[in-house]
Amino acid sequence: MNQSYIWTLPTRIFHWSFALLITICLLTDDDLMAVHAISGYLILVPLTFRFFWGFWGPKYSKFKDFPLGIQRAKNFAKNVLTGDEIYVGHNPLASYVMLSILIIAPIIIFTGTLALGSEEAQGIFASLEKDKIFKKVHEFFANFLYLLLFLHLGGIFVDRLIHKKHKTLNSIFNGYKNTKKDESIKLNLFQKSFSLFFMFLFLIFASYLIFNTTNQFIY
Image 1 (tube, rainbow, N blue to C red):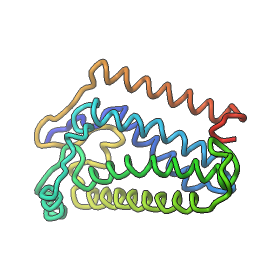
Image 2: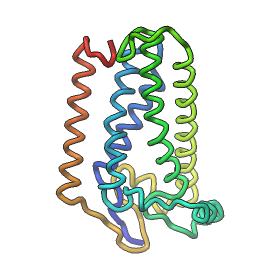
Image 3: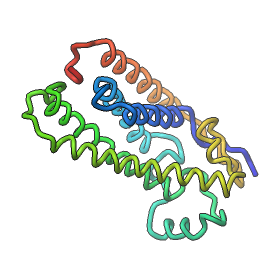
Image 4: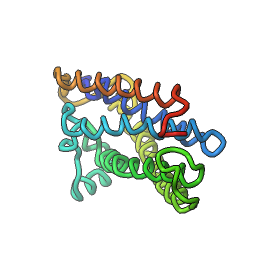
């Protein structure tokens, strides 16, 4: 087995910033609405980054490298316990979960913004009339997202239990996976610059939301 560098630093930063912000949103709600809203808005940055990263990022991070399709899903389900088929990047389950998150998360953020306006008379849609429908739709999609994340964590648990030698879990910390041959990747100058731009954008947006107590997004 070879140790290959698969998940670059920008990919891992996206993963953990998204996970952290989702956790904060899960732990905060009506009692800490400002924190909940700030975290929700901040998700937009890594989410937007990951969308473009799916086209301009390195191999295995690109959408075209996702093993999608009915036949691949069948093969994955058939071999998940045996480990006969090794996926260097995302496996089919992780691929579908990732794509679903990229679709559902913007809906959650948008409906959350509508709910903030109608329920609290705050934010961009503060002029909306009070209506619980936005909050209900927001919570519905949020619960669906939590289900997807549960599937993701379940997949990691199974992989860790049965295919420990692949070191899939370790790879999201250090970037390295065990592969049959060397599959290591490197970022080009554009990818490095693009990643730095979004890191600075995140810091600027976070500072604006946190320290500007009159910003139109929250208040």
